[in-house]
Image (cartoon, rainbow, N blue to C red; front, side, top):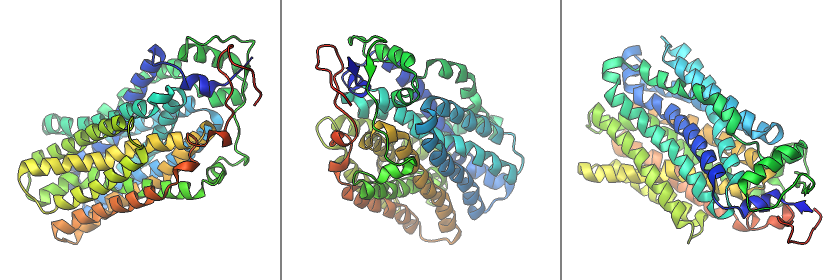
Length: 454
């Protein structure tokens, strides 16, 4: 008989295999979030210690974003050809090792170099982890599983300012970077436990390994090494990126790139400059770091709530509303108010920037077929990182010209509105989940079904 791995995985029930895949991907993304937010946590101290101007500080922040843009495109594209497992492990090593080295830097040049190299890994890990989760999650739980794991990003983002408030006054800013080296200890475990994507195993003829994984994914299915494995439909182009523009997906791809660009401009702009913006608004350093924690908490709540609402409502429409709501919330931040009111607005900002970015990745991972998943996420993330580079620079520029605080926040709100418009234009009908006949066969997954050919 012929087995369709994609269908077999989609009909599986959440079990021990899925749980441990979720746990280890969660840990990876937790440190990914920590490493991204740690610069914003120590930035006020670094500016004072190294005598940096706001423009210089923003430029240093952009080096990491440039590394992430390059890493997302490079490793996202390579993973669909070389396999997601090894690329993910390499990415974890890069971002952990070089972020840790930032704690040993004694000048801005060395620090910037380490941030760029860490950025390569930070850019490569996210698209591959999300693609791997989407590959193996049960069909009805794909969005929820990805959303839960991406909450690790926000928890890591909360951990950085919490350690900054509790440990930095006593042990210095260097310790906050040394903590980032912990994932290096997990690399042997990740190498042993992370599965390779089914698409790559099929492409490389590793049938025995695939059969073992599928037996863990769906123990109820009857599978043997004598069964035939359905081939996946490859992109007609030998260049994976070109597959993103096939099957009438050109408009979708361009609009996803626009959405990622604007979304990550907001995410990294706020992660880098929110403490300083709140200091400019009259709050102390301790309170400003607390706002950074609230930003991440809002992202967690927003991610989980929208993922749950996705059971009843369309995820794309929910994201459009979230981006628009974020633009309003960020604008209102600039006009001040009671402390409680400000915390609510910061939480909304977290949900509509970081939370929306988490969920748009879940949406994109299901919009494209398995053979293009890492490429689609990698390219979208890479284009988005260019917006991420602009965010810290924009914030530094705005602070340097001493604009009214309201205009600073409006500048970060406008991209949210553009993201909402771009995502509205994406045609749902061209997505893989709505049009699977264009991408893959619908072969049976058990012996009780009629055998079909690819």
